[in-house]
Image (cartoon, rainbow, N blue to C red):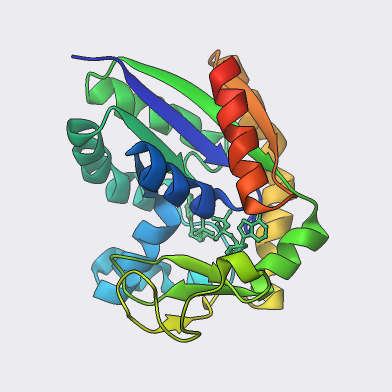
Length: 226
Ligand code: ADP
Ligand code: AMP
């Protein structure tokens, strides 16, 4: 089996992880697996998991490791069967999920080179981005746009460029849920990096506070130096 490449994207909500992931998919032919997208898909489909996590997500709290693990296993296997390079957006999210991640990787018998990419943006910038975010309501698309930035606007304000489904604000993109999510990130991110470092995973830090093309270029440069 070829050696796979895995980029683990971490960063506060609104840092641009999903946006940079989509650019990597379009420009490099990689694939991305977002546990947040997966959670929202379960909610829209009304699965047992979806029913359990609906309220947790709306309030900006984290879903249990057990449910995340149940959701991600098959998706991960499919991603690795079909792609050489996989971005995991938002997983592992806290230190206890680092062991979960490595157990999944060894369970799949994968030989993988793993890098942790930390997107760094001040809280006041992400707050503004999240309040301006529009997301495609199609559970299989979930493309992201911004009404706060000309280059990230959809062509038609209420429709997704890719699938033409209606765009909407995410239920957890209100001020109180955003505050919970930022607090949770602030409390867990140091321990998450430490848990990765303890496993020997290299951490690459990207200044994600500039324009999206600049962030993408920075990411590309840092990956080339690795
Ligand atoms: P995350 O996946 O980290 O939560 P998103 O990729 O969904 O973040 O981006 C959050 C919001 O900010 C979206 O509305 C997106 O269009 C916008 N955005 C992403 N990157 C940038 C950037 N570099 N500058 C300004 N807005 C951005
Ligand atoms: P995101 O789309 O990354 O902003 O995630 C949205 C929400 O999904 C988070 O606020 C959590 O409730 C949940 N979530 C996503 N990924 C994870 C994870 N790895 N562990 C726990 N909860 C998660």
